[in-house]
Length: 116
Image (spheres, rainbow, N blue to C red):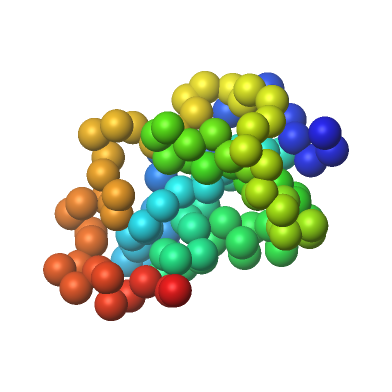
């Protein structure tokens, strides 16, 4: 499938853009670019970095980076695929890294900051 490079590992264990922000941000759920491995936060997260990455790079496919989720989302087609090719490990965030995360940066009123 175009837009997928199964050999590319994820960019890290959390949202690369939230981690690079000053001060660092937090995320609700994570998405992994299927083409370059960039890990960004979902559209419910304050930063919405996965969608921003897709728009800036033209990389149309992300895969959930959440434990137990294997679905892909195609931004251009606005279609979800329940399965796709296996990607390089790791295939989800660390199990001890909760959602939202990272725990020490999540505000007490985090639900008020989510996009719906």
